[in-house]
Structures are given as structure tokens and as C-alpha cells.
Length: 213
Image (cartoon, rainbow, N blue to C red; front, side):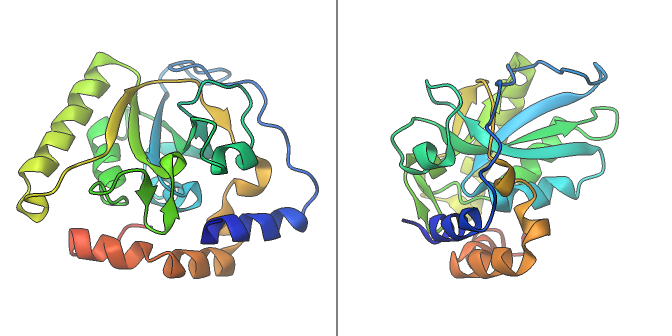
């Protein structure tokens, strides 16, 4: 079990049973929201660590941890963390295109992952932690592919393979309640996990600056 898995087990044992994921959100759907808002899904390893960078952006309305990419419905954390469900840990970012652009979301995404590794991110190992961008339109795919090409051309990544996948949008399944806003609700545990996972050290090595977490 990964370091993060141990933490999750401890937290879960201290809480009431988590709320079920419920119905999936279909790609591009915006229930009970103004039609101007958009949703985008990103996989960057531990979803606890992917929430804060997006939440700090002006124009981002909400960030929710969840699962996507696998064939089954209503996946649980235990199923996904086993690596056998086919799902990936992801965050769903709800954003206002009048205030922020998809390119900016992509820039923040890349600078908070290690795109040079396959089937893992930092200390979390397995296909459920691989990096991926789920695109909901031809425009998003074009921008995502262009951003990936820019990384390939970046001297910092010379000779390296960019393993991050660009996938068609898939149903998003909300993760259990105890995973939501974990960094805000459990700051000490979150910081301990993040440090011991080597996330910030590796991001500084890749990008030359502190990540926007």
C-alpha cells in the first residue's frame, strides 16, 4: 500500500462511512449550473495534491476529487487504489471561461505533475496514478496536444519521453467525502504526506521553482 493509502485508511477509520459516489457526470454536462461554466478533468496522481493548485486560480469555481477512465460504475477508493478497476484518480475542475482559459489550466496542470514517468506519480505507483488529460472537445484536444508538444521541445525534457496521456472525456465519478478538500481539512497530515512522497522536491527538480500548491 502507498504512503497515501495508509493515510486514507487511517482517516477512514476515524470517520463515518463515506457517502457513495452517486451518479456519474457525463462529459460536457453541466447540471444545475449556468451554461457558461465548463468542466475539465485532469489526472496527476494523488487527487489530494491536485485540488489546491487549481482552487487558487481566479475563475475556477470548484475542484472535486474523483475517478474516471475505467469501465465500471460507482467505483470505490478501495477498488481504484487496487489498480485493477481501470479508473484513474482525477480532479474535475469547474471553471468560468469568461475569467480563465483552458491554456492556463493546462499550464498549472503540467507544473504540478511529473510527465516523464509512466503508471505512477511520485511515491504512488500503479496505473491508477498515471497522468492524463481528459478532453471534451476538438478544441481542448488541440490545445492539450500543443501543450504536450511544447514539453517535448523544452530543453528541460530533452531525451525524455512525455508519458502523460490525452484521452477522450469519460464519465466522472465523485470520490468519497473524506477525500474532498483533504488539504484544507487535514493540513498537517497533507503536508506530511506530500513531503514524504517527494512531490515538491521532484517538481522543483523538473520545473526549477516551487509548485503552486
